[in-house]
Amino acid sequence: MKYFLATGLCLILSIPVSSVWGYAVKEMADGGTVRGTVTLSGSVPDPKAYNLVIFPDPEYCGRISNGNGWRLLRDFLVNEQGEVRNVVVLLEGVTEGKPFSLSVPRVEARDCRFLPFTTVVRSGHGIEVVNMDPVMHDIQAYETSTAMGTRVLFNSPLSFNRRHHRGDLHATHDHRPGESLVRQFQLSKKRRTFVMQCGFHAYMQSWAIAVDNPYYVLTDENGRFSLEDVPPGTYDLRAWHPGIKQVVKQQVTIEPGKNLTVDFQLPSPGRRKTALTVRTPPRFTPAALGREFTIEPLLERQ
Image (cartoon, rainbow, N blue to C red; front, top):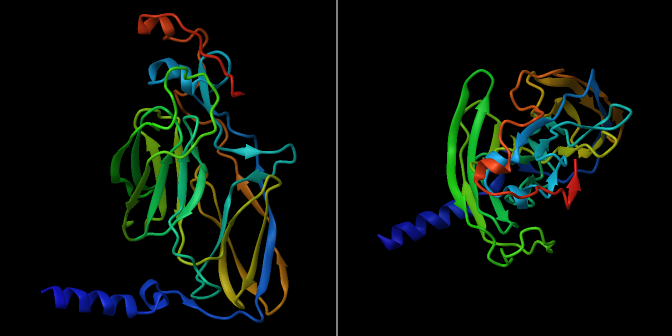
């Protein structure tokens, strides 16, 4: 039995990665470049607001807050020119080209928020989550789509980081890495959106889109992107943000050695119907926990 298992494993490992994953690595001598800018059309949506008192660890997590006991989740990062940061821009339909790393993306739980907020994943691979906080988190991962709803992928506790003292939760620290959690997952057919949330702290979220080739990039603080060494051909160029429900993409043709400029305008969702807004006065205060304390935004005042 051991012989057959070992033989089977050797056969699997001997199969080229490109044939397993449907993407072939090819030397690119005449690749093209596509670059551009992503802007938001319309007003910037208000951030979602969470009353820290109703979640665990309000003092520690409140080191990032608005000064009145609320944590704000700003999912749209837009500058004064309307340019959007951290939008994933990707090419669809590329079957060969530059090397495609099989590395597992890393997300950090740092100061009670997941970083990065947007990233990419690969179906059939996995994700790594590292707790940088002296508090406990609970990892809940889902696949989701507007048409087919949500399905749970995994749910795992993330122990508090024992490398930090819990005596003074307000103290600054250098965020030494704690326990690493790695989970593999397989997305359902036609589903590409992955979301991870903390079961203890609902304002901790990280969103990703599944990719099947290495031609993707996140926009910078000025909404700019650049994809290089693209094999000549016709593809769909897509701009993805978790707050935009509709698919935003354009068909592009990449010519050998040429540069192509393509700009995107994301339609703003406007004012969102949500109960997650700041209420003054709040329904719950620290007194609801049976003790008096102050939530101080010592790290960041939002």
